[in-house]
Image 1 (cartoon, helix red, strand yellow):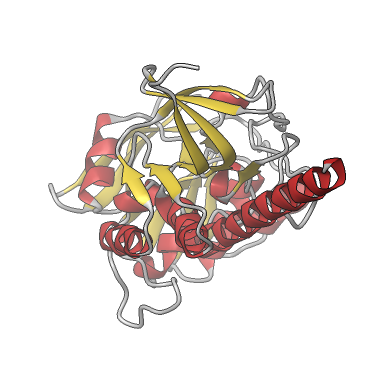
Image 2 (spheres, helix red, strand yellow):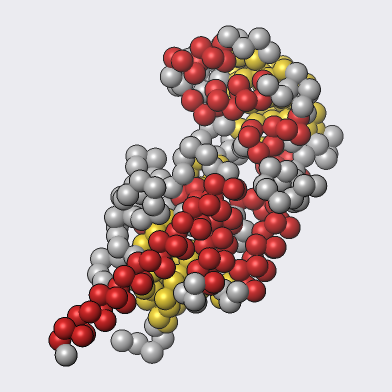
Length: 327
């Protein structure tokens, strides 16, 4: 074995609420965790200006500040937080092997995957501009809908999640305009019926987004186009919500872990963080396609650390028994 290979007891792949919470619990259990932050240190929450639904912050907190605090808390208990991302894994043998930035090789007794999922956006320059500014573009109605109470908003999407988020927004906003790019919904009939029967939701079929309008700081409207008539028109709005799906960041694991058709990691045992590979655990949005909230991600980070601790304890106990029997 090469001297350049590093051996660690617990490797955490990814940061964010899941990764940092796993690190806090793993550190306190003396698992000496090493955490690689990934391509986006702190995860998706670093793109959120205001977080007001995470317990313990009565006055709210910005996403970046929360991630800084979680990182400091993990480091306080001894987590080795490193910049870099895992580019390759090999879970085919008894040793869990990973490579950092295609260079450094690590062998880990346990691995906690906290790589999250990335929201899909339309890719319009104006959309990305106001997303970066935090001025009215969002991919999470549950996270950000509260800030648009009694205002007019636009949401793009045609699936069950889009319908669910549109209905959620309808309870907060004065008007929700739903842009569906095709002539029909992709959602289930019951979800489609729910939005169609909600008084303050206006549905525009065969409609695509041309541009997100704004004053340079915040969103003021959306320019849309009817694909049938060719008409281009503006919709006044202070918020633009994109609900066209998420992509879990799990591609490097697909050769070894069981994934669903979308790419989310499947828990080997319901109610645990276990995967189909012993010693490899998953937390956060890499396995959660339902809730996708910071608080639920943090909860599964705790679960993963506890599962990893129990796994190592059981392995050590088995080793002690086998050694005692042999002697």
